[in-house]
Length: 157
Image 1 (cartoon, rainbow, N blue to C red):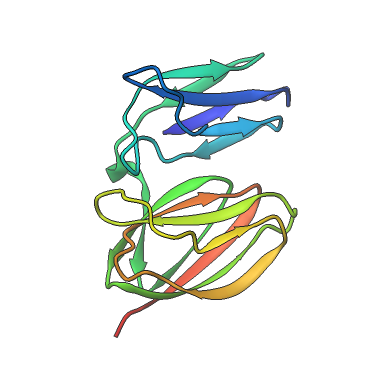
Image 2 (image 1 turned 45 degrees about the vertical axis):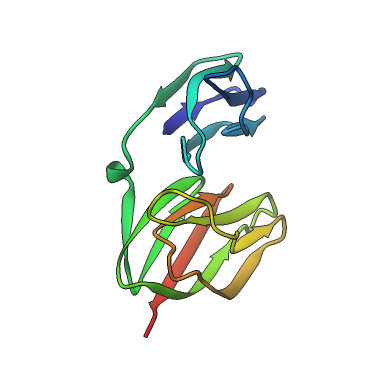
């Protein structure tokens, strides 16, 4: 899902509901201007409607995962803000990650090929630079960031 909103820096949120009317985890919840790509209907969630809380103009585009940027493993990718990356090539082994110079919330959440969530590999509010071991079944990365980030992934032997 591609989202651009909140140019005035007020409160903006996207809250999905499932078919039974139960709220799922917020997709976006910020008071900053927002432009990013978020994972939608991953990990067994099946939203049937979205509640948008906004005070100004917003746009949302629901696009298939095939439209996401790809990182061929081994390889490196850089970006800024929230994004969803599809891993191609070899199975991942380790990831050297740099990001969060603004000391905001920074997380990298891997998913397998069925979009089932794996254990987070980064989850911090501190600036981050480190190398982590990845689950070799990881096929998708959801990046939650407010600023620049870089990920270099090595291939499993």
